[in-house]
Image (cartoon, rainbow, N blue to C red; front, side, top):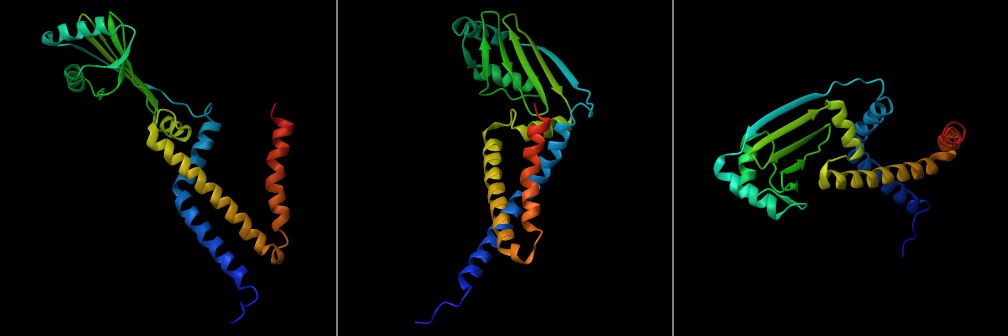
Length: 210
């Protein structure tokens, strides 16, 4: 049987490390740029001024739908259930919002739906007398990006993406460290730079974060 060439195993492992490193970096590229940029905007939120834009709209529930709404208000007082489909369809046509499946907070006087979203907020209220109010607040695209960074009101899919992105970043860092370890013999500055990158955050945290 032919003997394995000296260093062949090391070369194969290093090749695999490079492959995983570039794959994870490709997956992380856009998201890492986004999260790095929003790290700056979040850290300097007091400097970045934003003027919220508030939109307020009013409408009146059609008379044929009033009996159904009043009945639901009586039957579901202090409960959190979606609007009836017919009333939700009317709401979607009367206001720029989709409330189908959104849980409403019911009382005997009204139904209130909170509609938080990245970069802003919104709410809808329908009273038993038929008056309906909708308000939407838009804090701008910087606020939207900041909320995407934090996963605030972004839904399950974006939350899953953040988890996958985090795992890819861990793979990227570990493979990068191992690649540097393999090349450290020919690059004397490798370990001092790595040590500096580890020690600096720890020292800053101990000395300046209280």
